Image (cartoon, rainbow, N blue to C red; front, side, top):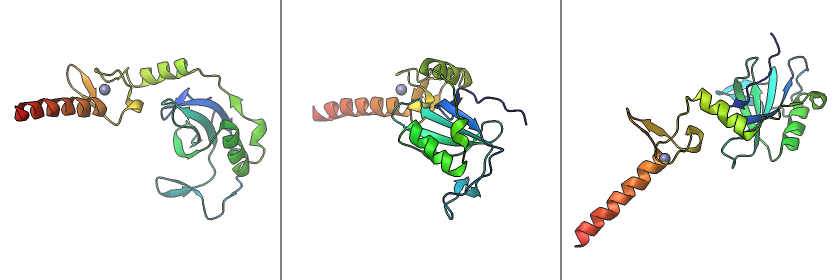
Length: 164
Ligand SMILES: [Zn+2]
């Protein structure tokens, strides 16, 4: 399998560093606690990426990926350096292999927008990864947060009417 670099974004997270680990013998550092993906225990993977959530409030995550950089599982980490130390436990020697992407937030968002066809809430402008759900209508798209806010606005109006 050709070793292609990852896309700038994996699962709404900006890739900051990645490594090819398909030729590193997997070392199960946590016996009895294998990485689980879709309820299937899964250990060695061929690609590993460290990425930071585009939403900002999510710390770095380690994505355990297949050859096409599809995330099979993810683990959280406090910092990118800690993430690298965690991966080192499973893939000894990976430390020298990390390739930094230098993808900027702007580049990541541009890629994300191209992948989602620029989908945003028509009312607040937030992107799919920033909201808990979007409803797409023929003329506009609305997020859950806006639906709830507008719903509450109407409730207040009703209260005023009842109070009169
Ligand atoms: Zn909205």
